[in-house]
Image 1 (cartoon, one colour):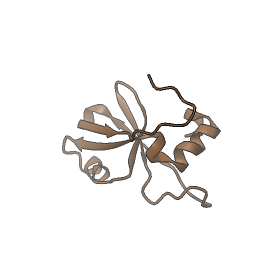
Image 2 (image 1 turned 45 degrees about the vertical axis):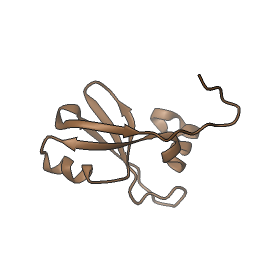
Image 3 (image 1 turned 30 degrees about the vertical axis):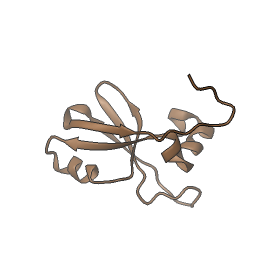
Image 4 (image 1 turned 180 degrees about the vertical axis):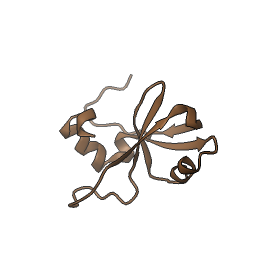
Length: 98
């Protein structure tokens, strides 16, 4: 995550994923491995391209604990029938709203 966001921002993403990232629900086209991942309530979109989704499985992750692993799944979009994302609305003091 640090490579994509920068180390300071990556720490924010890891510590406050509900505020910083969009949760994602995947609906697969029948792929068994993707079906297992799709049943997880702790998936966040880290990055998306026209052909791939980069999804973080945050299940069991506790920020600041030693030996924590960040698991990013790279999923081809043709394996996903459709997906939906949700990001909570959070106003930070000092920020403008347009």
